[in-house]
Image (cartoon, rainbow, N blue to C red; front, side):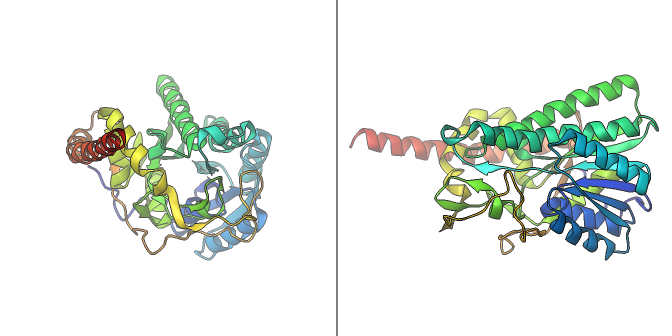
Length: 352
């Protein structure tokens, strides 16, 4: 297991682009890139939140510029990339972080909702990657950081559209990686898979549940995600897995997927509900930004862990295999216990 060092190589005066930078993980990462001395370009839909994030980055002493754009619009992303290179200089790092989600069973999804989640979360990453590639190729250098999730490996209930989009990003990224290797390219491509993070997404994501949504515990602070993203930009590896739950989900899905199905079916539906009811006039950000709520942290600060283990997970790394074996050993007992309990309840219902 490889943990990123506390002191990372110098990013001073390098141009870093962060999408989804007006709130949450993107905003936290933009600030940290600023503290590392980078020139930070921030892309997001909502101009007011973007300007607030820009001011926070500049407060670190770094230069920052805001470029309002919807990443679902390929032309808007290209136009932003052109402006960034004209006004800040050659792009050295591009971080694809923008996303939207909704909490809803598949049976209640509308086609336009699935399309929107896919356009932002998947195609937004594709658009950003292609904009970065076309400029980095002329210099044969640069780093593209895809911000992924444990849900890129393992779908969970109520977030099928988001999980599907994150799976698609992983497939697209793996294909591109092989092409870059075939070309002998100097461009680095790295994927950072995050656990549940305490961001505003749970306060403004669309939901059809009766109760407000929440992340599946354990929850981590956005600063933990930011450290992993900045570390990946400075020390690119094939993938980074952030937090023990991410490792658990990925390895368990590879070894005992059916048992994981049972555990998620039993725990992850109500596990994404808060105690509070959804207000009838609650706004959401699926198609339009929710103004006045852009911030770094969400509503789960009391339970958010400030630090997360970061595992570098390239193919063949012995530490990954050993860690995976230990995790699976622990998980199997947990999942089997959950499955037996669920089976026992089913038997009780049968004999009533």
